[in-house]
Image 1 (cartoon, protein in one colour):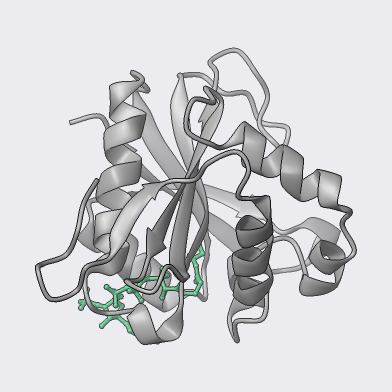
Image 2: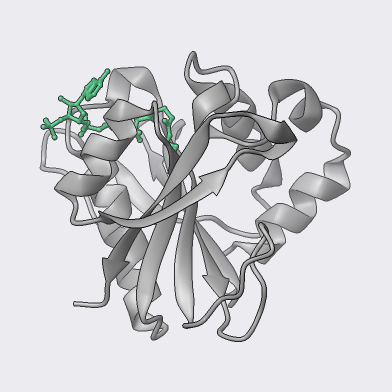
Length: 188
Ligand SMILES: CC(C)(COP(=O)(O)OP(=O)(O)OC[C@H]1O[C@@H](n2cnc3c(N)ncnc32)[C@H](O)[C@@H]1OP(=O)(O)O)[C@@H](O)C(=O)NCCC(=O)NCCS
C-alpha cells in the first residue's frame, strides 16, 4: 500500500472481487471525461449498456488474487474511488488484442484514469508505483501501454515515470488516419 504524504491520506490498493459496482461507476465516469475519445477504446454508450455480469467478470478477473490482471484504485479519505490503473498480463507466444504476436511475457497497462481534481498532485505516480511493483513481482519482462498520439498530458506523464516510445504504432480501427503509440518500460 502507498500514500502520498500524511496530509493526503489516499489509499492505493488492488480491488476486491465483490467491488464491481464501484468498478463500473468509476469506468462510467472515466468514459465521460473530455478526452475519453482519445483515452479509451470503449464508449460511454457501450459501457452503460453492459449487463451486471460484464462488470462482475471484470472485477473478479482483476481483483486481489487473480493472476491474469490486476486493477488498482486510489481511494480518497471519504472512501470515494478517484483514480485507477489496470495491468493485464500478456503471455509470450500469444496474440494481442490487435492481432500482433506477443514475444515476451509482459504487462500491459490499460484503463488509466484519475479524476480531474486529483490530477497533478503525484497521485497518478503512486498508482503506477503500485501497479509496476505488482507487475515486476510476478516476473514480467517489460510493461507497455498504448497512448493516442494527441493525448499529450498522458504521454508526458508516462515519460516522467520512465516509459519511452518503442517506435511501434497501432492504427485505430475503422480506417482512421489517427494512430496510437506504444510506450514501454523495461524491467529495471
Ligand atoms: C493521464 C492522467 C492519468 C495523468 O495523470 P495526471 O495526474 O494528470 O499527470 P501529471 O499532472 O502528474 O502529469 C502530466 C504532465 O503533463 C503536463 N500537462 C498538463 N496538461 C497538458 C497538456 N494539455 N498537454 C501536454 N502536457 C500537459 C503536466 O504539466 C505534467 O507535466 P510534468 O510532468 O512536466 O509536470 C490523467 O491526466 C487522466 O486521467 N487523464 C484522462 C484519462 C487519460 O487520458 N488516460 C490515459 C489513457 S492512455
